[in-house]
Length: 110
Image (cartoon, rainbow, N blue to C red; front, side, top):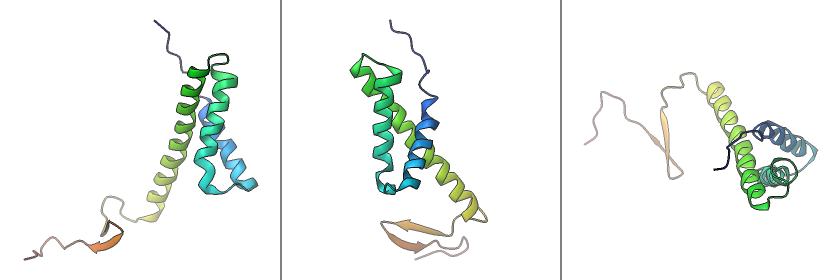
């Protein structure tokens, strides 16, 4: 049985920092997830599992996707924290691209 190790997990913030640097240099923001995946796969081949292509691609994809998730989760948390005065309750809801208002608690629609 193969031993499981997490030695490549430290690459996640490194990939995130490299993607941020590339975005500041000039790559479009829309391409940043693809760049993170590419950097993850390259790190898989050169650092995580050199000489084992299948393992390198798999662990590189996991590392790149983890970097994308770290960025997205942090961004969403910060936006939610600073955008709403009461984060537990929202007055407006989006359903299929259209805004709808929620009814007050004491009103009943018929």
